[in-house]
Length: 602
Image (cartoon, rainbow, N blue to C red; front, side, top):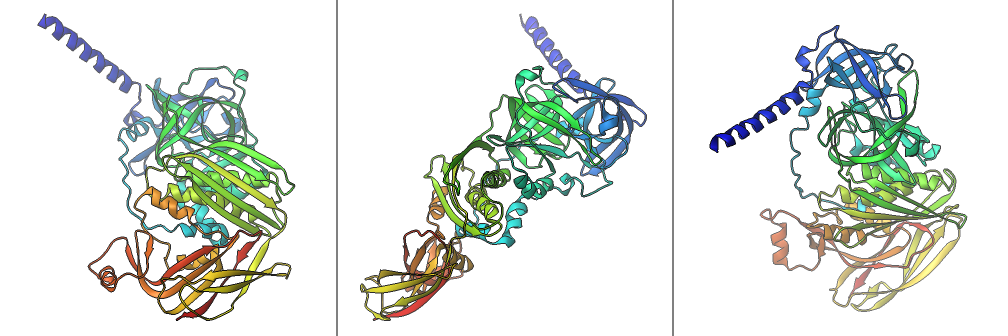
């Protein structure tokens, strides 16, 4: 009996060893690659059928990157004489002696021959053997008030769009002409206007993506439903619905439920979760620089889990987490337009894609230049938390649509990059109201009926607002002095929400280290708005901000403790104490200005 069990165990062991050896044997070792060898490759030129092309090995380039090699080869056959190495070909498998040697991944711009760089398959497989490390949140100071600066100061526009989207410069096509570089990835755009594509094309190219307009989803019935295999076309969907953003490439290798593709980074964003679909190729457009494959998604197959230096790793059957977005646009002609789509969840991509899609939605109906006022409201549903609400108003002659799009994306960007790992966005609602005129008013002056008061007394405040057409609006408000306030000088500050937030940001008054996500969301929801005025009662007095909360009138012993060098952490002494922040009703204007007047409490 024991001998039978032993025989069975040995048989299973040998079978497993044979299977492992067979799998390794299917891969051609880089050490055996020599100049003059001939092989073949697989890719899709049209529809879903995988075709072959010929490969002549020219040699191996050692250490083109850290521990990375590239096989140089001349491609021929099929349509390659006309198209050369084309965008969307990334990942096309190459075989020598019917064994997989690597993936077509690199090319020369404006090359007269289809000479390509091939990423060795072992390097593609090995990079994904390491399990991604768990990420731990590191406490960091945040200031939600700075979200307003993104939408209002043009010098920050490029910083918001690009600083956090900087990728390996090798991904940027066309900037190193004559050098071997990753094949450009065609980005198929459906439901986008030419103006919006033109506005964001530089940012897309910085990410190594070449925008191709006018491609939607393909009708599955028009193409044969062939099994996924090495050489099949695939598409990474970043946005889907009323607008579609998808990037195309080719499958290199299948192993169980794992899909290896591209042969170079997609965006080099590491661990991720992006939708992956089969694709049908409509055609290949030959160009002098780099020809492009025009493809469209057909059937969903899984999710991309990693995006690294030598390719991407997908898993079949996995369902990625997408964020539903509903955008309502109240046009300047009193019509309601609604857009519904989904975007990927990613710290890098989601804010950029929200900016892109919101801008496109505005441009689809409203003017791109000229007098315009846009009211933006963004509501984010976060799992297990209260909704996040953010409002901003933009009034501008030239860039209102861009600033409005940035305003809508600001809270998304802020939350995803706050450092908290439990930010799960269940849906995003964006509501935009457009008016074809600038509605701006400046806080010109304020007036008080008395400058000597007692605690608990009420004073009358007059506010003078000057509109852009020169007309003046005068509003009067009663202001009650707090009963518990001590004697001494007191400042009454009147300002719009943005001006008040900017002054607080300059003094770091709104900066703190949130202890939890709930505290961060509360801070965002309490942000001041720029379509209304605020009355603040403040005094130059020592206090402290503890855990993001202002603490005025602290006993001298506690102030001394918090100011001591022996105390560190999320405690900061302050020299200005705010007693009252009163929000006045919303107006029809984008307000600007800050005025203050001093009185004495007896």
